[in-house]
Length: 179
Image 1: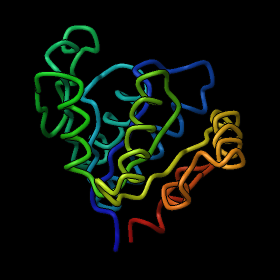
Image 2: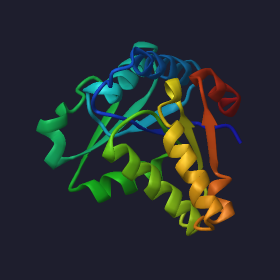
Image 3: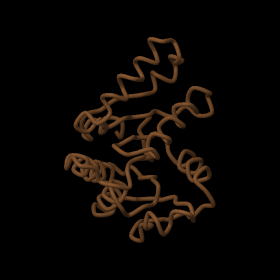
Image 4: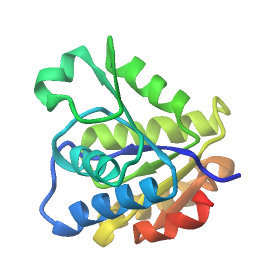
């Protein structure tokens, strides 16, 4: 089944590597051109803002979900299709998960890792059965992927959840999942 709505978890900062922004912008264009709705955290800064801006630039559809607490801090995006304001981070993540068919992780910080590991855990517990992609822009997640392998070798992972992770090096590799 083709993905029609994709949750994207990423940084509210740009990071140091210009490839991170390039990939976010390429991804946004690819999503808009293929009619894939962006579901994300609702911010206008960093990679979050870059992908939302790109989807909107190419006439795509964007739903942002942001908790009241972060409206001022993350500077909510005022130029997207829909912005949902919720009470807290837990409701934000639950809402994002409920609106998407799959999730994609771009470079980011603690919040991005929190979202990655929560969605992986929910897969493991069969709370949902969504495909999870990691966009390993410029090798950003190499160390994390090595650690996940180490957890597998030490017998701390369930194979079903691990099989849900697809690692990509370029946004264009997602296109085959959109059609």
